[in-house]
Image (cartoon, rainbow, N blue to C red; front, top):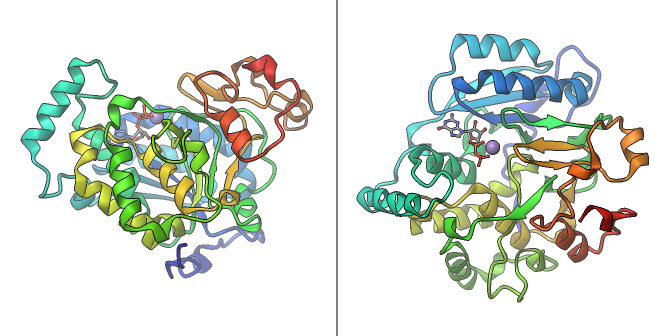
Length: 346
Ligand code: GDP
Ligand code: MN
């Protein structure tokens, strides 16, 4: 349902690198972070480089709502085998749109904070979620690229990634790849689903034929079941975010004010769009990477796979089939065969 953006394969040909014969994809790593995230970022970069990027040498785009410090640029770029690029986010991508009532937004932050909702009082968190929902792929440094791999500070990769995940995406016609899925806190997105349903009734043409509605809803779309792909790891095709369907969806959500009056995350926004506007074969679970962010990990529970890929994680830590994960549902609605012994890890 989405057309070509026209920006892919333009600048990439020149940046398709100078030194090496490997035919890289039109792809980059992308990180949104602050200068104060430097050491956590050094961790994440080193891990990605050692497990994957030293072999493939993809570029890395860093974005920030302030200038990156010289120290940040100097130290992070020293670890990256592709070209590192550093961009500031323009204020219209990181500020209140004029239709937002800032008093109302402030009151709702206070109300949510009283309820003990995580990040409820943080204004910057809302700008971050809105930026990741509707703007990161419009940043001038991102425009030349088609695919991205999103990386956050302190993430870890547990397995050797010996094939090019971007090439996998293109060759297998995938649009959105993830490692962990989970339920959202309902209190952060009270009206996201009703707003989405309004959008769908206006634009039924954007809903894909063979979609993943059953992943995000237990009753064919009446209610949202809160399942989403955890967006701190994403490998995806930005032509999708740049498509008419997604742009209209983002505009519709943005105009409703929910990024500020509630605390809508980019993860449920991306996931609902991917589940509804893509046919399900466009979505891919990277089950062989091994990934950690914060308290959740993805670790292959198949020992042969772990040994083959030199994973060093404990399968007991694998979140995929645990109660608060949406992994089992994902396997079921995709008709995927679960690994042997998966019940031992529920
Ligand atoms: P969580 O994963 O939902 O707990 O949110 P994080 O605190 O990890 O933030 C998500 C991403 O946005 C991380 O890569 C952060 O470094 C980044 N981030 C969050 N807030 C800001 C901010 O105010 N400015 C910048 N530049 N980056 C931010
Ligand atoms: Mn995070």
